[in-house]
Each structure stands twice: as structure tokens, then as C-alpha cells.
Image 1 (cartoon, one colour):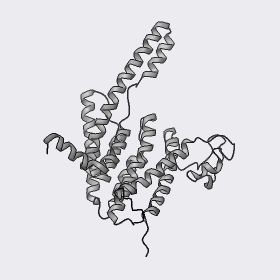
Image 2: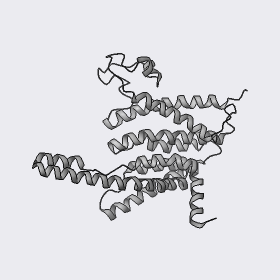
Image 3: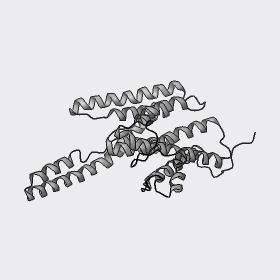
Image 4: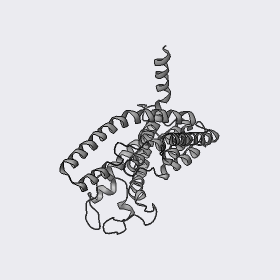
Length: 301
């Protein structure tokens, strides 16, 4: 049997990534609105007419329609094919990274361990898009990504060469349970919710895919990223709120003041999910190298 070259496998992963990106577009649009992901089937959001399958092909469908719906000729946002293309590239990148960024595109994928790494990276990289898009806007994480990560991790663990099923289960329970306990303690100390349950389930999924040690490292790196970004953002938001308050007081308009307070409610808050989602593939790829650099920095040569 002729071996399949890497370039062909990369093309397949690109197509799979684009298809997943198309499904993620559905998640990002429907889930926060409480619409089922299955029923009703794909339809035009304006005239409600059913969209045929061939118009739903990732990237290609938008190009065939030239960016306009077939039914009512209304513009279709270019965000859809861009998101699908990005997910396609991330899909191909997952296999390419698992192969060690080789330049030999004619060589086949050597063993099952590489396939396991590629599938794990596929899930981690493509999860960045829906987690960030939904969590930033609606402050929640889709269960299809968080709980789905646990299921994906358990399935990938059946492939020889990666985590064992036992390690995957322990990783999910320990990572998710540990973050839940940490959030519970923080909530009692701060007297307010300190951690969303969506973040707990998301980290549990990472634990199932990467193991408990790597999941803890993801939490640490995500926390550092969060602090570096959230603290300056909170200061900017605080200054903005103070400026609005001064403007409202100067105009002596009670309605404007109330509106300003409503607009700034929750200002300075960035959800934690996107930081976890970005840190996960980074640590999966370069966690050992980063830890080695850190230990050398602390303890020297």
C-alpha cells in the first residue's frame, strides 16, 4: 500500500478544519441566542428560507454566492469565510506542528503517536475561536467545546503513544476539580463569584487531552497572561468611567448619568476562558521548553 505524503494529509486537515470552522460559526451565532444547533436546519436569518447543502460548503459556498444570499440577495458577512479559512489553516497547522514543522512534505506521518498529537492540537487550536468569540461577548463557554474536550481527550487516549485512558480521566477530574475548589475558596474569601463553571469544564477538557500536569501549567500561564492584560485594561476602563461620570455631572442629566453607569457596569472585566484557550496549545507544544527556560532562570545552569 502506497504511503500518503504529508502534503495530502495537510490538505485533508485544512478541509476538516474549515468544516469545523463552519460548525463553529453556527455555535457562535445560535448558542448565545438559545437556538438549537440542530433544529431548525440551516436557513437564511432574514427570509427564513432553507439553505441547500451545496451553499453551506465552507469557503466555497460564500465564493459561489459572491457574498450574497441566494434567496433574498442580502450581503453575507465576510467574517464567515474568514473564520472558516482561519480554522482550516489551524487544522493544517495542528498536523504540521505535530510533525515538528518538517520541510519534507513528501514524507508520510510516521506513527500513531504523531496522529494523536495532531488530533489533540487540532482540538486545542480550533477551540480558540468559539471560546473567545462567545466568552468575550456573552461571558459563557459552549459546552460543545468544554465538555466536548473531555470526550475528545478520552477518544484520543485510545490511540497508542499518547495519554492512556486512565491518565486522561485523572487529568479531567483533577484539573477540573482542582480549579472548582480554587474558585470555591476564592469566592468565600472575596464574597463574590471568582470562577465561572464554564472555565472549570474547559480546564477539565484540557486535562483530559493533555494530562493534569500540563493542564495546571496552562492555568498558571493563562493566569499570568490574564494579569498582564486585565490590570491595565481595568485601569483604562476605570479612567473612562470616571470621565463619563464627570461629563454626566456637568450636563446635569440624570438619565445620561444612569445610562453611563449601566454602560460601565462590568467595565474592566475580561473573561478568563480566552486566556485558557490561547495558553493550552502553546503549552502543549512548548511547555517543556518554557519550563526548562524558567528553571534555568531561577536556578542557573
